[in-house]
Length: 171
Image 1 (cartoon, one colour):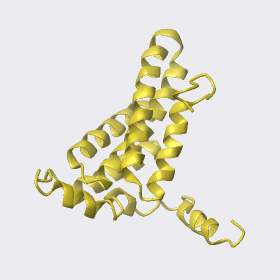
Image 2: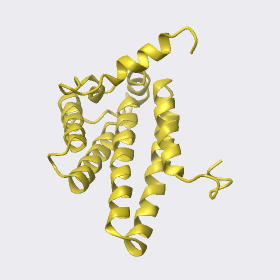
Image 3: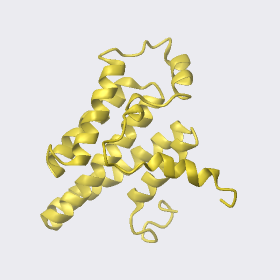
Image 4: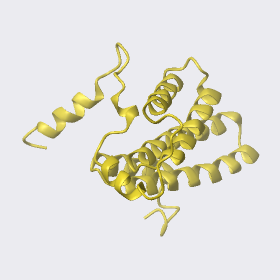
């Protein structure tokens, strides 16, 4: 819809991020990565326009969303076994998050924790070209390293809410 009618949707990048999250939950990581990349591209264009046309508040809003889009893209690359691409996207997400929210903000800290979990799980190793297809198939069925991080104390248990919603007989 966004491509055919760009004026019909108020926030096309947000729509791509929502579709990315949905496809990721369904295990369709290649499609999720495409939508995350589309969101990144749209937000980068929007950011360039915002820097020249509007105030700092609008720029910060776009940069905030871009940090999240890069994080989503990193997670999907990780699912697909595209380790080098995931590492680059995690770095961009953390850099933007720190710049927009500050290093002490909860979201910036979460991005750094996820990057640290990724780095711990994958180090500097890159998948070999020949093994890439088998590795991609194997990794597409598991959760990325960043998904195993325990929630902060006092943080809402969002996964349990999702699980409860799926288990409701009327859903």
